[in-house]
Length: 197
Image (cartoon, rainbow, N blue to C red):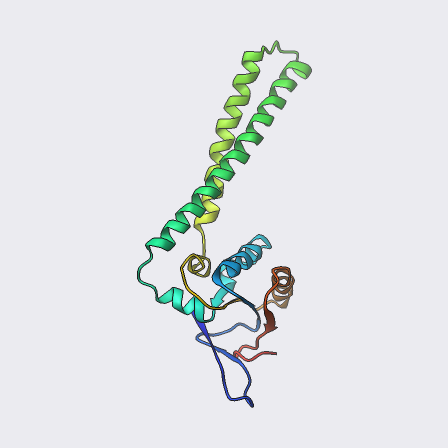
């Protein structure tokens, strides 16, 4: 859902329109969609629910209105491929180390006669197995991308607002800390009616 920032008469102040807000809200302004994507990623890493994150402002509205999505789809596919590749490599390294440890334990503790070929086979099996699991998990977590995240891959100009909305004030406190680390152009809390606190 895209929201629109509108200017009102000076006596009324700034207001965000286009949807309903929760009891507690924080909005951070970024120069473009790419930096907004970084903020959304940081919020996701901090365990903020994807359903609580929104993308607002003129760039989000333009991106949501685009009908030609080929370029954005290509960017998303590249992003997913890099995530799957990174997960597979990390899993393969963890699997190889685990295989080495299992071989060492089998040889040292149990007293089994472990040849170099057997140790290499166990490491290879661990690398392949863990690599597949790592790639699958990285891809799966990336596929569960919310609409605000997808919109940041579009070619749209203008400032973007990243909003976090929750019924729990602690979620908003955490989101505010995370967003502050992303160096926004501005940040403010918003009442349920869309006016700044």
